[in-house]
Length: 193
Image (cartoon, rainbow, N blue to C red; front, side):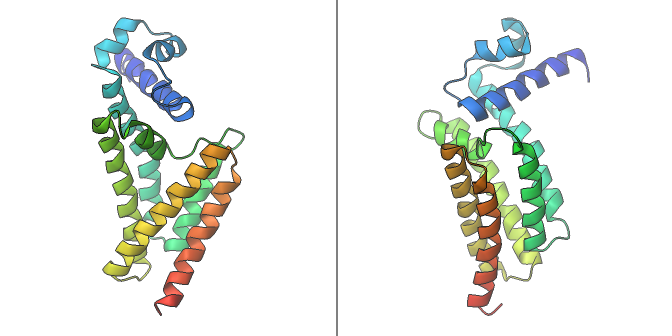
């Protein structure tokens, strides 16, 4: 990676961490620059605005989270997929304050004041739902059932992550894992699948 690419990546990674932990509005460009030890001009060389940086942060989150979800979905039924995903998520929060899902955090905060930024995050959430749907199809559900259940699973996932962020309690990760498996089993039993 060239020096310029490294500087841009440092800005993105620092912003991703600060936006996630402190919030988008509470994080200023000066704070990001201070933590990266980069001059102000370097920020504006790579990004037109803080909103432009937020779009790059979304792509960064997608690279980490969605690639992991996609990789975990390959050849796994629903229960194996959930176990693998939550093992990954638990490793990322081990010993840290639980900050919830970066998509939900940024999406909720920017929804009213920055709709263009929020829409980028919404696209990421739709990708999560699509992966859920594909795994449910692989697990033997019909397209209609997979669509319905993937929406419910995304709600459970985001709901527990929101509760975890508000409470800073990592037990919500365990509860999300457990409930996403139980909901799957109950749904199949109820519909005779």
